[in-house]
Image 1: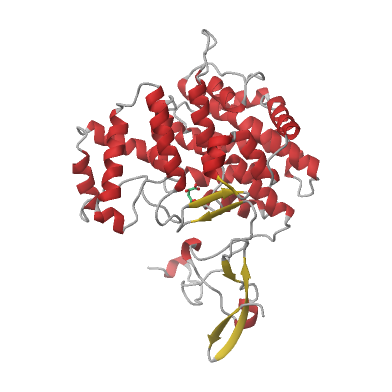
Image 2: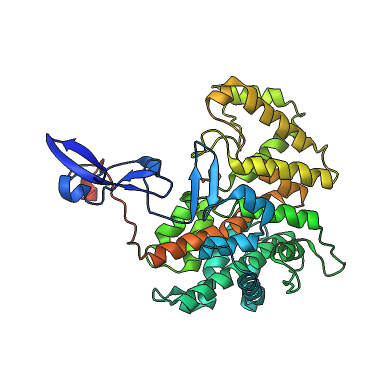
Amino acid sequence: MAESAELILDGKSYSFPVTEGTEHEKAIDIAKLRDQTGYITIDSGYKNTGATKSAITFLDGEEGILRYRGYPIEQLAEQSSFIEVAYLLIYGKLPTTAELQEFSNQITKHTLVHEDVRKIFDGFPSAAHPMAILSSLICALTAFYPESVSPDLNKEEIDLNVIRLMAKLPTIAAWTYKNQMGHPLNYPRNDLDYASNFLYMMFSFPTEKYDIDPRIVSALNKLLILHADHEQNCSTSTVRLVGSANASLYGSVSAGINALWGPLHGGANQEVIEMLEEIQKDGGNTQKWVDKAKDPNDSFRLMGFGHRVYKNFDPRATIIKKAADEVLTALGLEDSPLLKIAKELEQAALTDEYFIKRKLYPNVDFYSGIIYKAIGIPTEMFTVMFALGRLPGWIAQWKEMRENKEPIGRPRQVYTGELERDYVSIEQRS
Ligand code: MLT
């Protein structure tokens, strides 16, 4: 007999079906709750509420498991490439050699952006945060490809929008940095792979030869893979909610970029580096700052520790920590003062009962900023890097929601405002 949940309200019993996922997660299906009982549920922050069924990413917060389409991220980080993982997330399977080559070739063909995009850049103040520019220009793609806003796109049209977005976001992202630095913009190179092309657009100058370091390309691929999707996080839920209104892929991803920009979400990696630099500037006395973090009267809190879903450790942090050691050693930065401070903070978090009890262990943001800094990415670009990595996840989730013809997202509320009252003319107001 199918499992169900019984609810007793006002002395009356109601039964609701239980749905079970392939990893045996169970959910009470309350689709008919309000119709049958007049009640709704409330769950601020949705920590206990599933917004959808998805076949893309599975994570187990208790066991520290993260898999993309069933493949463990540990294997993908070590053996795959970001473009191959993007294909896996978006199309649900690892590509054949021919499929991967075609996907990569199509992306390469679309890396250029319309020349009018450069004019939009000129309108931004040089101090504009790169995430502000990125979300604006990704949404602006709907102006250059107006057919993308149609709610009735066929598979080929959706695939073209996917290719355009995968291809043009790195170009726009690199241009946000060059624009902020006042450097000449670099056009993409079709002879380079995805990660190498991004590094080239970010760091090359027309006045000199740019040598691409394969060690940095490898580290960047790993970082992008580890950020590629994370089931229904804040920015992905934003992409799905905006997309559920039949908004375009570009408009939905632009909304996701803005959600990711929040310091409580994707902005955390920038906050981590700024915290490490503050400790370094203060003399590098890590214990002093650990004590501040534990002091209830001190507002300072450690950034990059703990996670809303992972209860014991963030599996991505384990991989990124190893990559950080490898990259900094390869670049002769193993004695980096920031890495030293980071390791001391990590030791405190892993040994001090205060942090252990509160499950404050290093998360994905804690080490990613150290690698970005080591490979020359400026702090303000860290969240752009997160967006670059998360792009295939956003695309996959938007595409799944569209293919499953999910209804427009429209949560209810519990009203706590004034009861009915009559209008008062301004003369009579006090
Ligand atoms: C993410 O990867 O999106 C972050 O860890 C946040 C989250 O999953 O809630």
